[in-house]
Image (cartoon, rainbow, N blue to C red):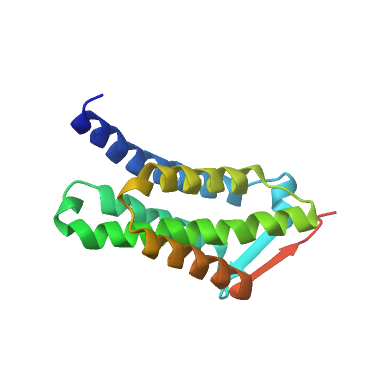
Length: 151
């Protein structure tokens, strides 16, 4: 593919993947399987709402007209994706420790990872590393999760 074709595919993926992640969150909220046992908040805010806001901002950066923000938008994307990846590490750890897995949560993590990989070549490496560490620390200290068996 030519450079412009590659950029178009990347731009399209940067819109489609966050919208798909929002759909995953909405389906998760109505989940009746093992994921209904998992609940969590970040600073008292339900993780579902945090994820929806997170993916909405990522989508808006790539909508037509988002180019006008250039470098600042790229830095926001870098900080969000890197911080989100750092946070996802803590959330995956939570599932491993409690031996309860949610397919929707894992799929959301996969979307964050795909978006990170898709955008990695345009990221400021120092900002990405700092944001990943900040995301992991934020989730480590401010994530409150529970595993509630529903009988």
